[in-house]
Length: 390
Image (cartoon, rainbow, N blue to C red; front, side, top):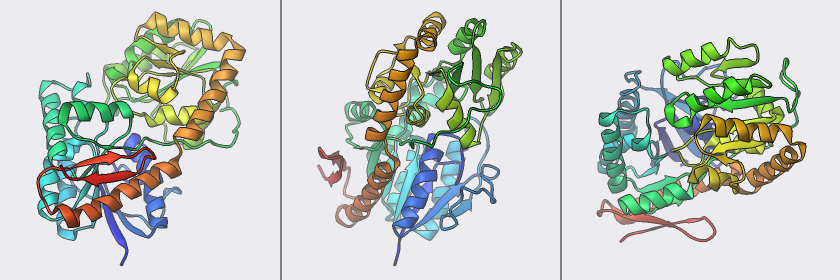
């Protein structure tokens, strides 16, 4: 009998929306290779049945929900959990602490959970006070009812230990070093500035747009991303793209084109501020992109250097980007260092192995814990997980 897992809390498989979806695109086939029966819950319209990246061994189930900024995660999470209660997999891989409200249902049904807690959602500027309260409460529920918690950065791991008294296993996102690709038509190697981000305030989008206006006087600027819902930042990007030196490509699902943009950029700006290990940053490093990033503990952890970390100020962003663009030696040094760090610290095969180990531990823990109060999870010096009861 094969081991079975359901994936709750992503937009589906294969999907290209964000970090969770990126992880599942790698993890689901890996688990299928290891003999797991994998079922990924999906939202209608977020995947393509004829996607060439789809592994046909990975099952998908569409569930219902309200497709809105504030209710989509909760509604789709609830419907996915209800479906899993009926079919009872051996373990549930749950993404996002908003789904923490439904973890007691999984526990009552005897389904252990491995929960990726994501970033510090209740500190994101895009949420109003009610949404921040909901996320914080969901985090408390996750801390109480999650079988095994996953933190994608050491800083997130520290925050959860301090704020909720729960240890977690550290599993970052991965990156893959691609083959050298041709420059995207219309661009020149080392001769443009790139930003790839969802358009939300905490990703330093508005500040970069101000810097981009100045940079575009002498350099080509390429912007990839959108809000997904429309709004002021999309309109700002549209206005900015009226400049002959600025291209706004919107949301980009063509992996090869995105990898090429990272490989050949003269400077890549990464402005994410409240997440943990960001998959876009890791993949940019794996492509050898020369990175200028917002100064946060998370970005410093991933880059392993603070040399090109900047405050969220347009003039500081402009200055650091121009310094990278004008110094050939610095660019070459950054490319090599980033590529090496991605290969040694953020390998997708290692990431997938850690997730599988966590799920195996959760299944084993179910047999011993049987709902006995809270428990915690520790990581030993080799990165392997050991689950313990207090």
